[in-house]
Image (cartoon, rainbow, N blue to C red; front, side):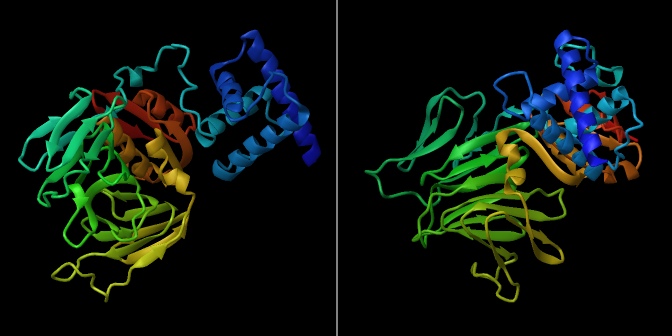
Length: 393
């Protein structure tokens, strides 16, 4: 029985590819073919049987696992392909398969919204504000032996004047991204930070403070690649936790509109301590912290800290310009969309926000394309009005 299904899938793919090359595919059929090619590396367009078998198995396994669609040989080829396309688009992570040929958007998406861009405001210790998206490349300012430079790719870089060791410990800077903005910073010790939308970092321009610690305060979401320095620990403080590292790669999501704070480790080791701290800044040892390992995520909620095994790449996908979600409810997904596209979200019913989705979608598509990829699952519908998105069953 299983062997017959594999043969049937192989024939389906062969027939579909023949239609594709003749230009006779529907939108859904084109989406399936293009998704398949984007997820496999082929030197020719002629696919071998084992490759077709593997693809067929993967598609049907994903559909069965996440959409509960039964594998029925009674379905027509057209119905099977439409079902496969609807599932594979959202499950295997293609962001630009629908409307890529300048097809007319549905009326519900006639008011489209562009994606976010690299933009942020830097506030210096004297109160001066620099709009980084408008500032010219090159040197921006100097502070106590620290030169701030905007690189050609837009990155904000802190460069240390090695001849000046008298850093002003009060030269605090704050970089803030709005909704629809993100930014990359290279701190004075070489640590790289990617700041997500609606987020902020506050730090000393020299990074080092009295006592030798490298200390940063943050809100929102940021990904850190910390330069290793055993003598000077790197500490990230949010309103509810403190993360201490020596040199590592990790992500912190600490938005005020989220119930929990998530710290995800890519490599190295980090220690997480819940706040508040005792007077004087020492940790309250009655509240137990945790140390996590690569591909673990610590979730701090009002009930304490829980540690889970995760795919760390999914947690940091936003840094690589993707929305990635694994069995994540729609309300959580829409909060991410709201921050990146600077839109308001309205729900026609409370139940629709609880529906789970899994997938990967490019952040650099217009919001209509992201919504269409969710809508093609048949589980949800959207309407765009200005900068307001209505979510419907």
